[in-house]
Structure formats: structure tokens, C-alpha cells
Image (cartoon, rainbow, N blue to C red; front, top):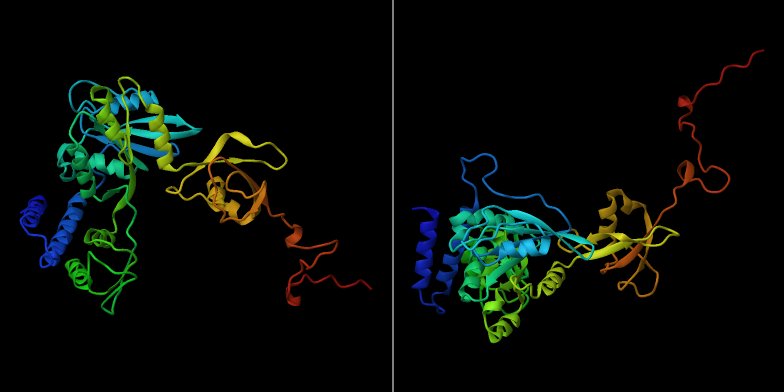
Length: 400
């Protein structure tokens, strides 16, 4: 029996099992078995060598956004309108067969937009090149899930389920669970609050399913069984997702209003070019990019080329800003002067741990280099002669 058949058999068993207090331990073990099988499904075959077939493109710009959706929802048209890159669009499905990149120039930054082929139900199992599409989306900063406003709401649930099956968690934060494997000592189970979804016995059964018999587990929030499995697996990626409802020009105003009020959602029309500017603003807000301008000593700030930082790519502190310019700059920094919304007064003397905000101006003051190894004043504080007398150069004897 293959892995996919075993997953379907366990899902069928979960579907016919009643959910109550007596069966929650059995359901927890079944969920752990499914998570293990899906992890095996993502691993490459043991006999394979080299890279598999895919369409990964080189990262470019200050951020990467992936377009994911069913076929013929307007992904290629949206890429053409936002970036100017031509992506073939037609009235039949699966027009796009490979990954087509484009560049969005917005707020002095360059954002890479990827038009991916449409995925179908069962993409996490490899149908329709679904694994390659999802692998590219894992390397992105945020995901734009393009949906057809005239279709049913089931499309959004199907896409979310397919992405979660391969370890992508949309608009969620990592669970506050501390987990560490140990060599001896058994399983240590603790929590800082009352747990309602999981108890010590269920946690032991899930860990034994993974053949883990020595570990330390600490719950800092009321987490579920799925959260514990995600922490044990350790290969989950938590990403932001914006649900883009296209083709609002073919539905009524009541449906448009209902879709626009949903969290993390925005409505557009590529045909009539409606609300595209708001889509770019929402994308910028979700990516959390921070533009920092440099100011040389005694000169005006350079507003032409900002240094772009983000929390997902390194961080947004002064130390991250210095590392972005050059790795060796941090040890030479004496202090920095900051103008902008992150400063309490202008200019503010800051250290390396100071967090920077968007459109801040930074001037770096370096330490002064001392001559001759640190001598102060008019006289040297040390001699260049060897320490041992026997190593010193002997003078020629005086002539008599």
C-alpha cells in the first residue's frame, strides 16, 4: 500500500470515528500518523540523485510574492497589469505552464511577483505539478491567493487545505510551545496555564508515535493537538496570505461588500482596473518593508537609494542596517544618529539594538583609529623593541 492510500485510509477512519472524550486520544494518534506520512510524501525518493524537475527562479529585489489560485481566475492578467511583464492569458484553463516572474516598482523598492500555474484539488499529492508550485510559494515572503468572486467559497477552503497539507500555515503565528529532545530523563510535561484541548496522557501518546521517549515539553498557551504536532515536526512555515477576489464586475454590490469585509481580503477587477492601488498598499503593509536612508557626515541625506530591511529577512535594527551595508562595519560603529519616527528627538544618539521605522534617516559615526597601536599624547606608550634582551639586535663593538 502506498503512502497516499494509507493517508486516505486513516482519513476515512477519522471521519467515521465519533468525537468525544473517550476517542480524543485515538484521534490524536491518527493525526500524528497522518502528519508523519505527509512528511514522507514530501521527501524525495531514496534512489534519486540531483535536483528534481521544477521551475524555481532566482530571488531578486527586496521581497517575493507568489500568486496562487485555481486555473483561469486572472493570475496572469494581474501580473501583466502590476509589472508590465507579458504573461499569456486565454479563455481556457492551464494557459500558464511554468513560473513567470515580474518586478513591481513601488515606494522606491523592487518586489518580485511570481505567476505560478493553477493548482487543483490534490496538488499536495503531486497532481498537476502541484508540488513544484507549492515549493516555489514556500520560498516567498507572502502569498496572494487569487480567487474568482463569482465562484463558490469552497475554492478558498480547498486551497487552504492543500497548502496546510504540505506544511504552510497561512495567517497564523507559531504556537507558544517549548519542545526539546533529551538523551535521558523521560518526558517532562509542564504548562503555565490550564489546558483544555490536550493533557499529559495525549501528549505522551503523540510523542511515542514519533518514537520520542526523552523530551521536555512546556505549554505557554492553550494549544491544540495540531499545534503540538507542528512543533514536533519542526518543518512548518508560517506565512501571511492576502485573499484577492477578482472579477467583482460580474457579481452584485452586496456580494462585493460581503467579500471586502472579510479579514485579510481585498476585492479587485483586472478587466476594469478597479482597486489595484489598494492591493499594492495592502501588499506593502503585509510585507512590512522598512526603508532607511543614509546620511553622510556633513552632507544632505541620500533619498535616491534607500536600504530596505524587513523582519522576515534579517531584522530592522541598527545592527541589521550596518550588516546590510557591510559585515565588518558593526565593530567600527561608535554610535548612530537617527532622524524619523523611531527617534524621540532629532537627532537621537542610538546603539546597535535600536529598532528602525520606515523612512528613517541614519548617520553612522565610526570610532577613530589610533596611530601606532593606541599611543596617546606626544610620546609613545610602548616600544617596538623585542621583549627579550637576547632577541634584540646587538650593536657592533666600539672601535678603540
